[in-house]
Amino acid sequence: VPLQASGGGLVQAGGSLRVSCAASGRTFSAYAMGWFRQAPGKEREFVAAINWSGGTTSYADSVKGRFTISRDNAKNLVYLQMNSLKPEDTAVYYCAAARYRSLSSQYMRVTGYDYWGQGTQVTVSS
Image 1 (cartoon, rainbow, N blue to C red):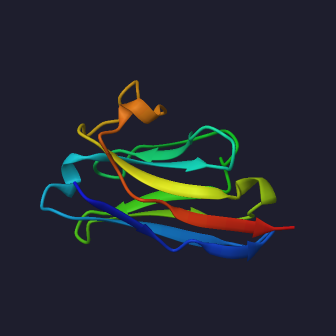
Image 2: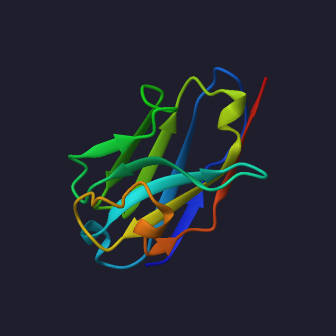
């Protein structure tokens, strides 16, 4: 399923930003979705995941309480609302789709996803 991430930008520390991921096709609700990020010189890391209905979510410890993942299956969109941003949140943010509805045991791994968007840059200034 083609994915297109958008909404990145430059924000000051303590600020908020919402990134979005648009999916093409009629089977969006069949996929669990995830957000990952990759900072320069670092490996891609898990940020958040959501099951097909939005009823189950999971977050990395580093963003828990600050970020919220959600989805709108009618619009084929998944969102990542980021509050209280820190300079260490600076990275390229990627959305990903997995061919299972529930969060599998692999949902925190890059290899647990089948489709990836192109990424959107988020820069948090101090």
